[in-house]
Image (spheres, rainbow, N blue to C red):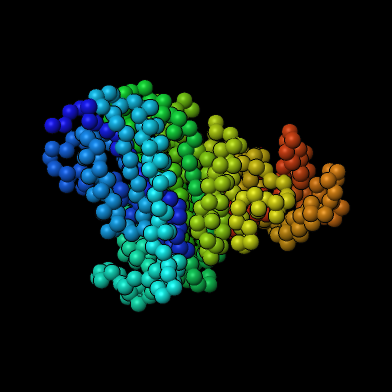
Length: 533
C-alpha cells in the first residue's frame, strides 16, 4: 500500500539542448529538432496515462524541454522516467532526456524542494555517458554527410523526402528531417492566430525546400539571404521571481503551472508582434513585393527564453519590436502583473549577425555571450548587444573584440532615443546614408581600418584613440558632411568619448549596422531617419 510518506518530486529535463538543435548546419534539421524538444511535456502526459488510473500525479511546471511533478512513489517516478526515455529514444534519437527525483513525504512542496530537485538532476546527469559516446564512429562505418554520426538506412516512412532516402544520413538527422514539417505547421498556426495573413505567413515560415534553396543559392527571385541574424533573448530576474513565490504545497504547484503557462503565452505573442513588425518594415522598404523568403524561425519557443534565426536585414527590427512587445504584454497579463515591480518584463537580447555558412552552434553561443553582456549593462531596462561576424576566424566574443580593437557604445537600451539606445543608433545610421548628401560607406570603412591599425601599433602609454591618419580623415569628413558626421559623434560631436573609465564610439556601431542593413530597411524602421535626438 502506498502512503503519502512515499511521495517524491520528479524532475525531467532535456540536457544539452543547444548541441542537439545545432548538431548540423542544416536548418531543416534545426527546425525538426525544435519540434522534438518541445514534445517532452506531451511524452510525460502520455506516460502518466499509460501508468493507469491509479497513478496520482500533481504537475508543478511544464514547458518546452522541462517537466516537474509530485508523484505517489519512487516506483511510479522510475516508471514515468522509463516510459519517457523509451519514447524519446524512438522518436528523437540522440536527445538527452535526464530525470531524477527527491523524497517529499507528507510535507508540503516548497521552493527548497524544487532546488533540491534541480541539484539531484545535475548529479544524475554528471554520471551519465555523453550522447556523442553513445554513437561512436568506427573505421568500417560510413559517416553521415552532415555530421560525424554513423550512417543508417532510410526510416521507411512515406513522408521522408526522396533525396533524404538516397543520402547517407545518421539516425538523428533522419528523425529531425522527418518531423520538421510539423514544427513549420505549428508556427504557421501561431502566426495565423496572431492575425498574420496567409501570404505573409509563408513568407516568414517558407516551404522547407524553398528555405534550403534560399540559404544555399546566390541572391535571386527568392531574395537575398547573405546575412542571418541569430537572436537570443532572456527575461531578467524571472528565476528569482519564481523562486520567491510564497506559496507551498498544492498552491505552489498551481501557481507554478499558471505562471509558466502565462510566460509561454506572452513570449509567443511577443514573437508574433515582432514578426508583424518585420513584415511592416519589409513591405515599406520594398519597391514591389517583399522577398518571397523572409525567414523568421524560432528555434526555441515555448519556455522562458527565445532563440530565433531571422533574415539578417531585419534582425534589428525584430529584436526591438520583440522586447517592446514582451514588456507591454507581460505588464497587461492578469497572471503576471504582480510578478515584477517594474510594470512588465525587462529582458536582455544578444544578436549575432553571421553568414549562412557560419556554424550555427557557434552563432548561438555568441548570441548567448552577447545576451550576458547586455545583462551586465543593466537589468532595470531591456538592453541589446550585437556583433557582426564577417568570417569564422574568430568565433568567441572576446576573440572578436580583441581583433576589432575599436571602441563601441556597449549594451544599448532597447527603448528611448539618442546615445546609448538602439532606436537612436538606428536613426543615426539611417540619417548618415540617406539623401543626396549621404556619407560614402567607403569613407567609414577606411576610417575604421585606420583606427584599427593605430590600435594594433600604438604603445601602451599612447592615449590617442584615433591616430594621425584617422584624425585627419575625420576632420575631412566633418568638413564635407557636417550634419551627418555630427550624428556619428558623442555628446560634443567627437568620434570617441569617455564614459567614466570606458572609451565609447557610435561610429563603428553605425558602420556595423550598415554592413547588414540596407538603407531602405533602415528608413522603414526609423520613419525616414531624419533625426537623432
